[in-house]
Amino acid sequence: MSDHSAPAAEVDQDRRGFLTFATVATGAIGAAFTAVPFIASWSPSERARAAGAPVEVDLSKVEPGQMIQAVYRKKVMYIVHRTPEMVASLAGHDDRLKDPQSKESEQPEYAKNPTRALKEQFLVLEGTCTHLGCLPKSRFAKAIPELGADWPGGFFCPCHGSRFDLAGRVFNGSPAGQNLRIPVYSYPSDNTLVIGVDAATKGAA
Image 1 (tube, rainbow, N blue to C red):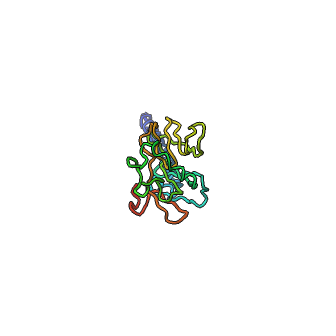
Image 2 (spheres, one colour):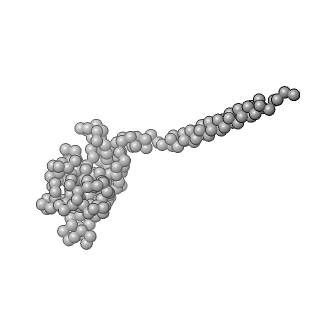
Image 3 (cartoon, one colour):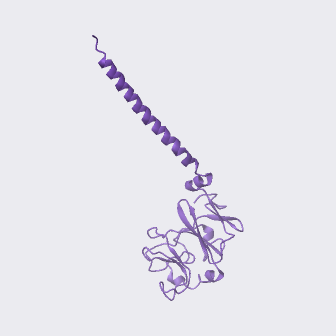
């Protein structure tokens, strides 16, 4: 009587190996197809923003005294619609600032002025403290108890206490050594701000 048990065992073993391989392969293919809709769900604008493309901001609904935020190159940008009173508050405290003329701070040449802006009513800043990278909070009201009777309005970093005025200029006594950074930007129309591109840089940050 011939022994057929060994070949049968080999066939069963081969079948189990094939089924295991097929199951793993099917699972991998299924995972790949599951990922496709997720990747495809990214709109072109979202992919562009992640890559650092310029960001367009509609200013038409930003009220005087209001601040809005945008994200450019994964960093938060502050856009403040300054009132005439807020602009006026920038004068008179240069002696309390580390870099009142912004000579040692980062900004485009057209923002190297007392208001640090292309249009004085709109302040555009990188919302990152130049000390250790926290996000400063808006403290636009004057003389608030938290910051003293001589506070002209501006930004306060809750992490280590750095203070900045309404042009992002850093006050003496703050851990931060430089004014808040200003990105390149432009105004293609009266109510449109584009962060990340201007006539001089054509998109270089």
